[in-house]
Amino acid sequence: MILEIALLEITPGKEAEFEQAFVKAGPLFQRAKGCRGMEIQRSIEHPSRYRLFVSWETLEDHMVGFRESEDFQGWRALVSPYFVKPPEVEHTQLAVKNF
Image (cartoon, rainbow, N blue to C red; front, side, top):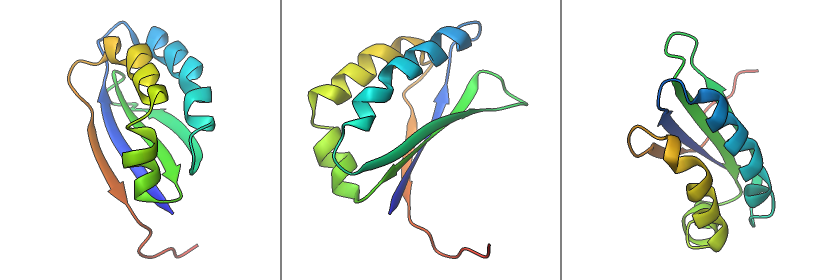
């Protein structure tokens, strides 16, 4: 399992609109091959900062299957108007889980 983590900086005052767009984008991810879940979490200290977490079966499911799809273009059309700057994206794999 691969975890995609993205830092999203949203235009101040547009957070509610961004969250609504994020909800609309859910089906685009839900039908993507290998996508197992997605959520955003909002920073308490920096209310215009979000972290996107998407679980993928493989890195290729994200980087090839989704990123090269029309659904990715739809995702970007819905949410990118709210970005202050391009998202910072990284992929992680579980190294250790204690409990």
